[in-house]
Amino acid sequence: MEVLFSTNALVALLTLTFLEIILGIDNIVFLSIVSGKLKAEEQPKARRIGLLLAMLFRIILLFGITWVMGLKKSIYDFDWGFLSGHVTGQSLIIFGGGLFLLYKSVTEIHHKLEGAEEGETGKASNSLSAAIIQIALLNIVFSFDSILTAVGLVSSEPAPKGFGEAALIIMILSVVISIIIMMIFAGPVSKFVNEHPTIQILGLSFLILIGVMLLAEGSHLAGFKFLGENEVHSIPKGYLYFSIFFSLFVEFLNLKMRKSSKPVQLHNNKIQDEKLKDTDITN
Image (cartoon, rainbow, N blue to C red; front, side, top):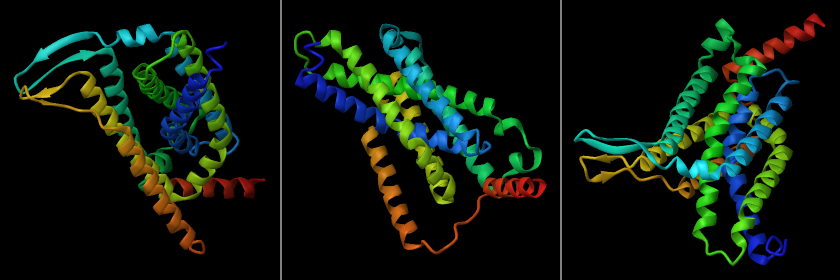
């Protein structure tokens, strides 16, 4: 307890909580877009379940940190001349998550602009269970990446005597506090995202960037080398999040300057408006 309330521990807790919130931005964007396709009464439930799953996965991974770090071991080594490397458990999870995020983001952009699937065939992608499955799959990847980043931050800092035993508690506390904060702001953020088409498209573009970052990180963890010399490096997260915040800042200025103009309706929004009108007429 003495170590937990020390200055070093409190600084570590604040730093990790801030880091978890920043790393959770992509999670909230994905939650907002996926839950925005649900009925209005189901959206808060989907967001709560999504964030609770994120907290659960992160805590489970923290308790199994030895297993997580053990996934660095090589499963398969290869050298094809033009490409060499070693496949690990960590690289497979991160790389697979990047591919899934790229696929999902591009598909969502297509649906919002073309709307063929929701508008014509009406598949079950609007159901709560389908949304939760998508959220759970991506939460595993986001949680894995978040925990690896947090563990790397803690292990890279010189720790005082006895701090190692408290590190796990501090990381768990940071996860719980960050998820509570995200739960408080998830509703307003989702409402804002779904009311502004440009924010939706920007959010999906950010998810594409994050998908590319995960692909690069997975390739780096696998030690991919082209022609035996050119090693694949991970993309620093600071560059990525700076571009996200800068783009959002520019768009907020645009929205403020054009308050009177009516936003363009994306295909999904039009379908939802028509459903609401039909419901009102029926009632």
